[in-house]
Image 1 (cartoon, one colour):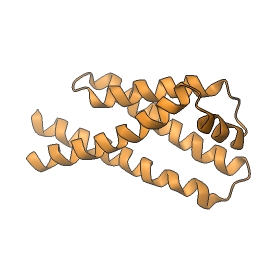
Image 2: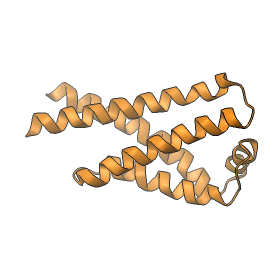
Image 3: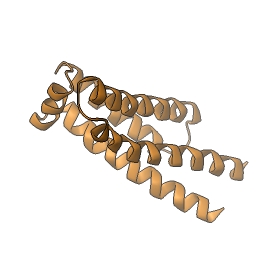
Image 4: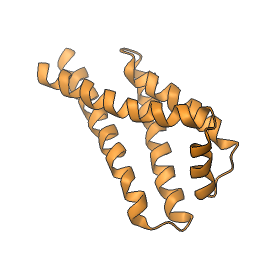
Length: 123
């Protein structure tokens, strides 16, 4: 049980850190974030909206409790990453560039699975 808790927090903190960093730069419409949006053929006004959503989702998965909010946060963050990968391919970038999304999605699924394992162990 202790190993599950440790691995859960390691993967969750790493994943949340990735989402918090990208969300922060999107929320403040940093030039680098806007360049990524331009490269993906997305409008710049979408950057702060997605950035704030990423920040809220990352915070939600870090706060203990609130299982329903946590479920929604995991789903929203998954769709954000999936959408980013799709936009990369749809805007003409090579699929290998979108393959990077496998890493954060892997952390997301690992964190989500360990969250449920941890929840089952405490009941």
